[in-house]
Length: 208
Ligand SMILES: Cc1cc2nc3c(=O)[nH]c(=O)nc-3n(C[C@H](O)[C@H](O)[C@H](O)COP(=O)(O)OP(=O)(O)OC[C@H]3O[C@@H](n4cnc5c(N)ncnc54)[C@H](O)[C@@H]3O)c2cc1C
Image 1 (cartoon, protein in one colour):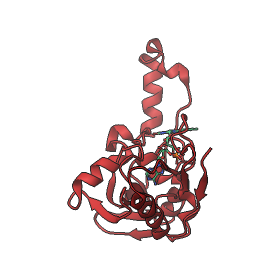
Image 2: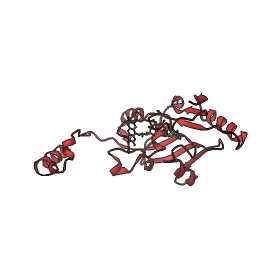
Image 3: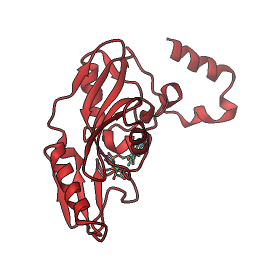
């Protein structure tokens, strides 16, 4: 069990906590873990006798959409992907890369990779982020991207929460497809069925 849970209302609540612990010095054994939706399977978002930061309490802020040649949405890291999908669809857009299960947070999946059926086309979610706001291990609030603070950007993406706490992300969007087809049929994956009539039927379905 953690000793305390922080329910931050702003990025500064997180940065003040981390600064405070950092300033105590290296003899402090207090550990800190960010918690998204708590769906990692080995207690990675727990901090034994430390402080857990409940990232979902940051989600009050509005999502900010940028519509242009490279559309994106800027969201709190505690936001669930399902909410991002619903709000982007209202603008005819959708994230380029999703997870198959959408009740996971942006910070939680960007700390792993974020894999789904679209990963073969666009790469995992960590390949589809333009910019991050991160609280570092010293409690500083930094912006990072491919062009700015590049080392921090690449360390935090897929970094299992060990290189900083993601507080905001700019997620790449694309025009939403008008229709998607989801196939739930294990038999389809059997090699003997991946031939002849079956394939023709599936390809007819896919091409409409
Ligand atoms: C039912 C289910 C379905 C799943 N489906 C998929 C899927 O389709 N695709 C896929 O890729 N994965 C999937 N996963 C795995 C899932 O992506 C990871 O477990 C993910 O990390 C969980 O997200 P979360 O929001 O629950 O994060 P948490 O479990 O709360 O946190 C995960 C890790 O990230 C760290 N972390 C959380 N937020 C932040 C932050 N803001 N900044 C820095 N570090 C942070 C935590 O400390 C922890 O180490 C699934 C898991 C479950 C249980």
